[in-house]
View 1 (cartoon, helix red, strand yellow):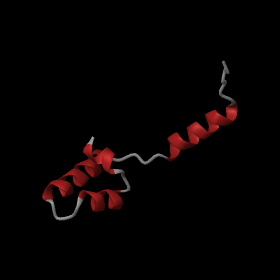
View 2 (cartoon, one colour):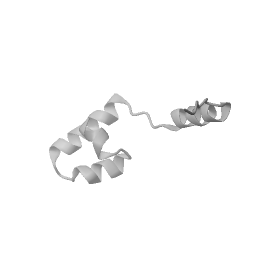
View 3 (cartoon, rainbow, N blue to C red):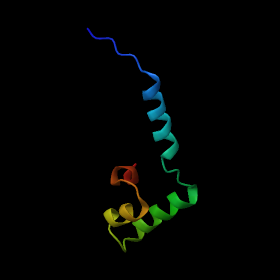
Length: 59
C-alpha cells in the first residue's frame, strides 16, 4: 500500500484555489434566484451570466 504525503507545493496550490474562488454577497445570490423565478431567461443563461454552475444554482 502506498502512503501519500502532501508536500508544500500541494498546500500552496490549495491556498491559491481558495483565494481565487468567487465569493457572492447575499444580494447577488438573491438577485440570481429572483431572476430565475421571473422566468424571463433560462437558468443556463443566468448561470453563464453570473459565472456559476447550474448545480450551484439549484443548491
